Amino acid sequence: MQALQSTLIQLAQGFKFTFGIFFFTLIFSIPLGLLVSRGRMSKIKIVSLIFQLYISVLRGTPLMLQLLLVYFGPYYIFGVNLGSIQVGPFNYRFIATIIAFSLNYAAYFAEIFRGGIQSMSKGQYEAATVLGFSKMQTYFKIILPQVVKRVLPSVSNEIITLVKDTSLAQVLSVTEMFTKASAAASAQVSVVPFIVAGAFYYAMNLIIETILNRVEKSMSYYS
Amino acid sequence: MPDANKDIVLEINDIHKSFGDLEVLKGITMQVERGEVVAVIGPSGGGKSTLLRCATTLEKVDSGRIVIGGDVLCEKGSYCDRKLEKEIRSKFGLVFQNFNLFPHFSVKRNITEALIHVHKKSKEEADEICSRLLAKMDLKEKADEYPCNLSGGQQQRVSIARALATNPEIIFFDEPTSALDPELTKGVLTVIKELAKEKMTMVIVTHEMSFARDVADRIVFMDGGVIVEEGPAYELVTNPKQERTKSFLAGY
Image (cartoon, rainbow over all chains, first blue to last red; front, side, top):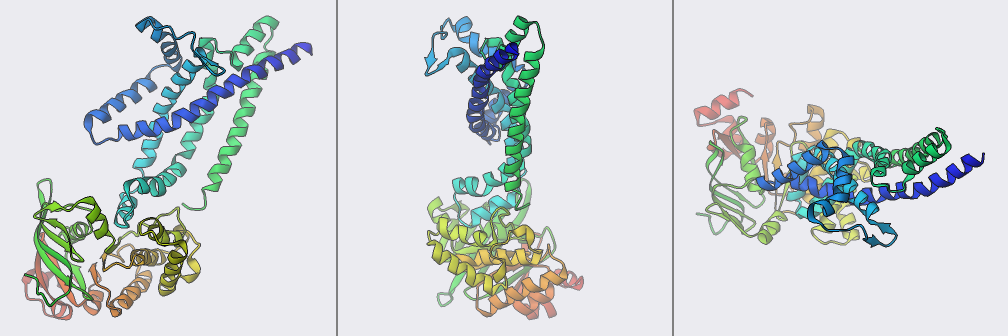
């Protein structure tokens, strides 16, 4: 009983970081994904190619490898030691994790957004143009709200995957929930910590799913 | 040369437009006077829609001159600055074949959004314009509905209201009834007839030959990127001069 209690406390401590990785990755990767999708759709060939390459590489290599590269890259490649950096409560391990996750998820989001934007009919742009809306107004008033509705199911998928992917931060020894669970499991010679961690992940995703379903429903007033 | 005594709303002079190697408009010249209703007819691929799209800034011509409401949109194929172009856009309305309403906006917001955010009218003023137009379109009780809950004919009437809202000098219709069944077509044509009675200046691309004959003052028959024949509506339909016009009209 005592073991379970200490497991819960340890996992709860780890959960703070798990949630932190999740939260900051979403905050940064969604706007970044929008930018990347714009770049990918650029009419300037070279710009489009650069973003295409970005998406291809970030999606085509393991996220774990990207984590290690962001963390060790600056020192091994450039000899710059960032290990001592601290921004508020966040050390460089955590910051590197957020950077790698955001870059990676932005690539996935970019392709989802591109699909959504390109599925919009030309007529919507044309109607907005002849009514005199500026490019910005057209994008933010007419196009984006409709795109949000269209991409929400795919975005939901990514968000739920992200919750589980946070466990990859273990490779940088970020003390998130999975790292804690592994440590507790080997200390107790028991699988209970893994099962409890699983329950945490599932509970979090259940809440997220409920929220996303509500959002989806709130946009179902038109088709 | 335009007659000084006439009030010309739309002047198109020798415009050419190619898509790649395909020349779609091979020198079109036409004028529309204030209060005049001009129907543009002709076979598909004859350049009617491209003409309309060029007149409404959705396509850029390669050469020629377009003047709308006294403002020169383009001269010898080179266009005016963006500021004037925006101003010119407020002088005309366009009604699309497939409506192109904004599905995430209510009927009311479809009509008022540009009034408020482009023409800087107050919300009250925009609402008033909206309810006046909806009453005219016989859609008074639909203000808070979304387009997906309306029939095609109702949607098209909303899009006519949207085009009228900014009080344009001329309205272009691009096959306004082609996406509608005959039943729904009637309501839309009735609305356009009403506008014609009120002396609204209109250019209508249409396949409804009897409608064109009854409503338009003048008909322009286009084929192969040129105007083959034009004249008073009734005369052109009942007594076409050109062989090409005759064979086209024989199909109706």
